[in-house]
Length: 323
Image 1 (tube, rainbow, N blue to C red):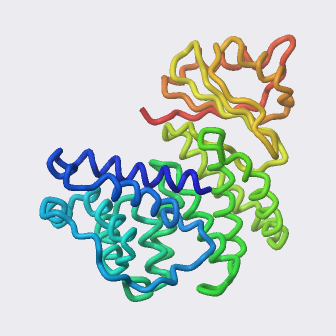
Image 2 (image 1 turned 180 degrees about the vertical axis):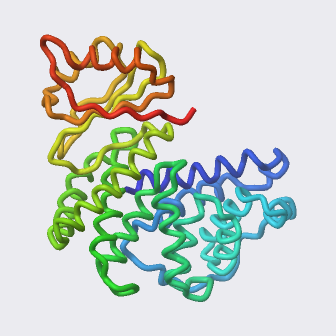
């Protein structure tokens, strides 16, 4: 999970730098930028088990007038960057101030944890959980798995809030769906699945069904929104996600219950054949997410590739993706 935390820090810093002038950027020492990224690895999504026990340290980082002006003007990315730099400096009071002011998705995990622990700001568990939830479910980035994992732990332990296995099960599901071959997190997938199944065993059948439907709705909305760097939910049935960006070529990911079976771009006419070569079972659920118009002709073309004399991938669902 540490890899994607670093990525979150990089995304935050990159976005912030785009909004700063070259003069302002030159005011930020490279060592501070690297340190902020490393801080992201520690706190971005709050996956670390340890609590933030250090007291506020004497301030060492002092923003330039230009940095401070950009943040005080309300620029969300500049506030986020400033918050991370203060966080790296262990100046939690200033870090909380700017991260909370930012509202940037890359600030939600860190600000949520600071609120939950009362670090640099009066403890406010409900508000902290609200921030973590925003980060976990945020649709534009498909959610942040570290925020989701932190929430799963909070709800399962029941120390800060009443124990809620349904919520723990749901947020563990988000973590599982975020495991992909893109960021190298697939090796954690089986461990997360085992943990979610343990929690799920404590739910009634009806409640588990409700949470599975809730996760499916969240994931379909995410994929239909155009985000392809994702995994799948735990399921006894294999799942295939197909992405149509034109009418002749597709990309796909195929998951069994425990692992990725295959992921690549391929001609639409060869799709069914390739799935068969990967030993995807006939009863796999095929979900087609199309950014092109899902005309009757295109749907027929997809079916022809999947169901013919030698293939019988007959379980289809079609979703129109956002442009």
